[in-house]
Picture 1 (tube, rainbow, N blue to C red):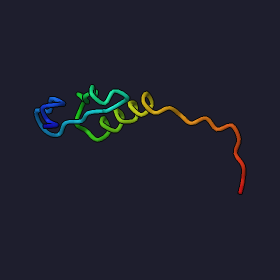
Picture 2: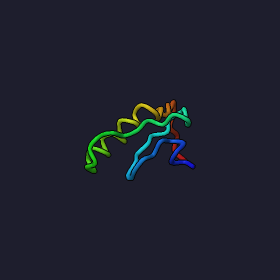
Picture 3: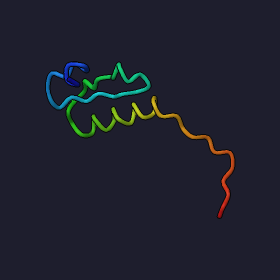
Picture 4: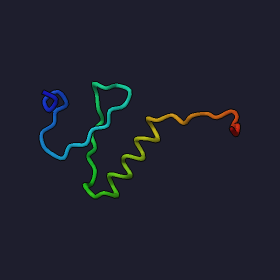
Length: 59
């Protein structure tokens, strides 16, 4: 099952799946919405690469 595969022992469990889908990174911080939001933004900044735009044209 997915729970045993990713060592989920309770809920809520928050895991970040980056490039290595077999080794997610667990969230172990506060359960406050602001802390989870901060964590999510930090993960996005490290996982998602910005798109480089060379030229914008209008229709």
